[in-house]
Image (cartoon, rainbow, N blue to C red; front, side):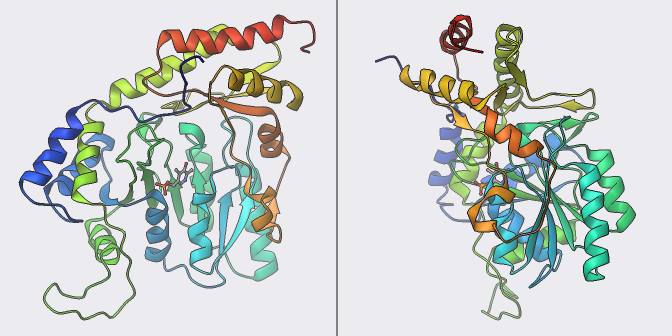
Length: 379
Ligand SMILES: *Cc1c(COP(=O)(O)O)cnc(C)c1O
């Protein structure tokens, strides 16, 4: 059997162990300690202002806290990008709020600005209230249309939660993703571009909000001396050990992005001549970390066949995220659709994209796809 090629495995440099050892040596084996503060500062320095970073135990927790800080509650309507991983939306349900789904546009595959505006106007007309927030995503690392989406949000006075879970290091007009939303989030889950094995971060625009977020993430203890609670909190802080992994990982973020972009370039160079294959576009405003290279085929049949052929050669691929408006669990929810995310879902697949992929791996993958399309039965 050929060597297994994974979709997006962790890429460990060795530095991580030093910071983990520091944590053990100083006995900071807790959700408090120097690695956490340093990791937060590392992120703040990297993405620049305005950012106040709170390290948490997942990206999902970060979205939950953002909703909390915005005062989202039962029955509030939240406009959510439909084409995303379900973690973008689950915290809305935790809050008893109501997600309403917005389809994608073709330029970035993210939230369609026209449909967003249509949805806002519709909800105001029907409910006589504005939706309480917008959750927009940088799919596979590709920034959404920041200016257009924010202009609409600002016009109606609706705050944006920027789900940059997949877009650490991506930029829009030379500014980093994670700096645009009223609140923004990253994920450091095992498959993301940098990982803490499991973890995430909330980015706030002020020191006060950061302090409030830390307070809520550590069970909302009114003072450190007594156990007095006047509000409900969570156990969402990142541990000092895992923050050590993050400190090691972030040191090589630049090479990790270069490698992922080089993977994309390799696939593009070898496959873009095949008329049945298209790539997620990157327009002039955008610099994507190319977390995952996702291609669309001209038909579901060709897509399924390629998955099968790669799988037969021990190569992992994944379908792209199934849109939320197609999910059984959200079947009764309102959505504003145009068919784009459904079409992408039915015809696309994510190719292996890890920063530790070798040239040999890439050649193996591309050869299988090319051979299929030079065969007679592909069309
Ligand atoms: C990974 C991911 C999340 C959630 O992050 P976790 O750290 O796994 O909780 C949220 N949104 C998107 C788009 C993601 O890809």
